[in-house]
Length: 210
Image 1 (cartoon, rainbow, N blue to C red):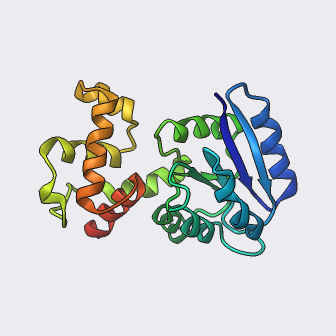
Image 2 (cartoon, helix red, strand yellow):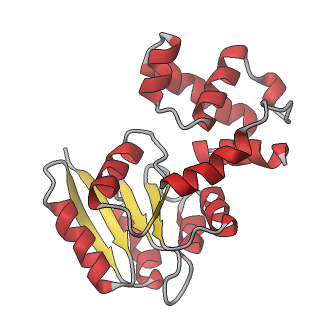
Image 3 (cartoon, rainbow, N blue to C red):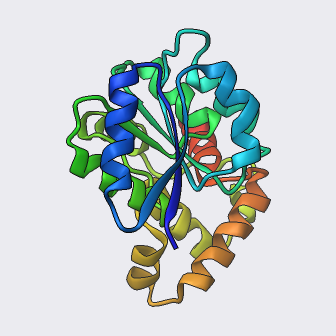
């Protein structure tokens, strides 16, 4: 089954180039293209693709706003920001809104394709420069945050591994447990921390650290 993808990008040539390369792959397909934010906002929730490639600075609105408004309606959709902006404010605003990946324009098409597969499989792909910004916020030990004291030792371990960017399969292999068990622990973490996804959990952790 192909990974369904929507592209939200107002640069027509870049939008079409992404579509062409993606549709050349056997395991993914572009199901919608949007060249402005309003059209994306009106139609994305009806399409509910697996992955959305989202520009930040659209002509009519910020891509971050679209994610903020649609994330709860599209819990199964993963958003990857694909933008020229690398400043902290936009990076962390995107992640706080619910983006699961952040790529800087100029990345190779191979990197973009691998990032789509990565986010579809539970990862959080980022350009190297962005990953360094994010990881710098997780250098200290996990603090005793609200809800954190309710987590079991195994849940704390898994939360820390999630914050390091490990995929569910990598966590399962590292802890010698099944992927289903990892998912069960992650669900418990979300419930105890009162969050709905991995980005919210990591963002909450980051807020308490700072």
